[in-house]
Image (tube, rainbow, N blue to C red; front, side):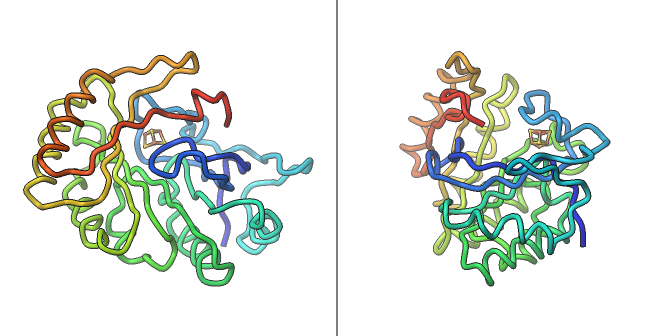
Length: 240
Ligand code: SF4
């Protein structure tokens, strides 16, 4: 079993509730969406890189699972968890299922799966392949295929007693109307998983959508949601 990998690197988590924690990032190539604000555009071009650097060597694509395991295993003592990210990692869902299961079950590692949230069926069927999930809530106009937001929220709600999953909403210019719709829906359902509003964050520290997001945090905290405002910290720190 092989994967097309965009890059692999050690860093600290820059988004969401686990900001600042040392992680190994395994970024898979490819995505099923084309968001205007995408900050990993290299993951979207049709052709994956022929290779990527790893500790002074060049690793050719595609990468067999067994070989990836030999690269990853020595790095595990230096991280709190492994982030499987993209692009959209679940475009290579069979590989992620096997790789994540090896990390969780055989290596006893925490696996953070960072997904755009458009594969809720995969999430439901492969809960032994990740420890927690950070899922974007993509609105219908961004999904291009079908609206999976309701199914995604059902999944997050089904795990909320036992997991630290979170749902992330990118605060781009067009998000407000739909954000309120889905936040209302979460209030009605009694959702208790953290909802992270993430302003688009430039390297100079400027953030878009903060004022509107602050209003949403105030309003929906009063209505019982766990709703947090967290910028893209890796952009502020100037790290990968
Ligand atoms: S889902 Fe994520 S990786 Fe895919 S285009 Fe949107 S922002 Fe980029």
